[in-house]
Image 1 (cartoon, one colour):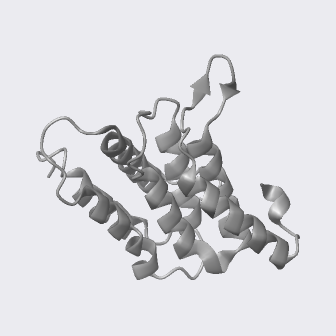
Image 2 (cartoon, helix red, strand yellow):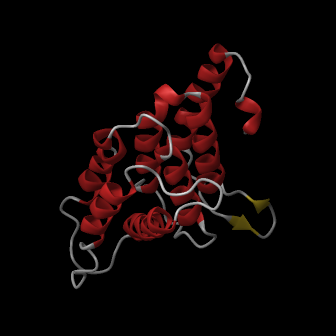
Length: 175
């Protein structure tokens, strides 16, 4: 997706509109299929979201919310098993790297996650909730360690604190 750089803004906006519609609607979220190979819609879409954040910096908060809605998508029976959680976390971290992003913008997208988890019953976690918690754990790691070539985002601490608060839902024993 690095090919987005240097493209006309109108074209990138059109691609973004199509991407955001597809990313939320895609229901085949399997990572690997023995007969088809890599499907990886969640991971590849996360990579695209990070690329769009660089090409369309004014869409950063929308991209954060888009990733949050993908992470909390309830219409799945596929439990992340091919590092989809890490790819989403990497994309979120890259989007959070954007200069000029205010703390409220850096943390605001987590309201999507809060709303999805609101009223979740104790007991076995539904697949979508497991995927969400796995992504939040991976995000926390990405925020505390940073990305090799990009470092730690400016509001990493604030986002990590919110992620930990959400992780107390399944992990009530966390300090």
